[in-house]
Amino acid sequence: GDSVTQMEGPVTLSEEAFLTINCTYTATGYPSLFWYVQYPGEGLQLLLKATKADDKGSNKGFEATYRKETTSFHLEKGSVQVSDSAVYFCALSVSETSGSRLTFGEGTQLTVNP
Amino acid sequence: GAVVSQHPSRVICKSGTSVKIECRSLDFQATTMFWYRQFPKQSLMLMATSNEGSKATYEQGVEKDKFLINHASLTLSTLTVTSAHPEDSSFYICSARGSGKGRETQYFGPGTRLLVL
Image (cartoon, rainbow over all chains, first blue to last red; front, side, top):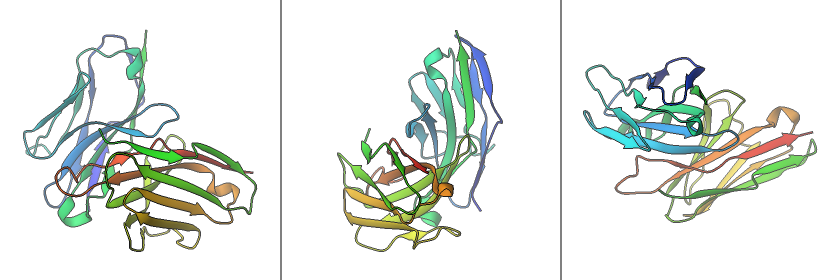
């Protein structure tokens, strides 16, 4: 079945540090890949997405590239801010086999200290 | 991006009562809505998928008679937790997706925190 594996957290960084959160997946079919962010006490917000191999999603300084050869979709940001502190979820969706239901990773807690 | 709202954002109820949570897509027509449950510090667990005008499809282990889902229109789905008990206390999140281009993307509501006393 489809699955998503994220690097274990929590991750703690200082402001302006470089961020990488690893995400790998297994899927039948051709998945679309997503990063969602959840701020404390809130629902999930779509951060970025990529729908086919080699696509790069980007938003708010975050980037992730859909790597089919390594089945990865790692999230990166060059300089994190305190306001980036949140839980980040990697997810995939395969329309053909699952009706676009999302399969989530376990989430990675990020804390950015001033 | 698309906007999905949930109401109420927080509810406290007594054991044995029923609670209804609404999920609305505000600026698009949601052909499919999803209901998730999230426990503290955990990922989201899909409870059910509902398509407008048809019965919801429940995930294995989710009691359909306890968690009633109605998707009566293209902008509204409701989740009713019937005869709620303390173990039903959780964070409930809905999401919605439209049809056509971009339908692979789900847009999430802000969540409803349920506390059953």
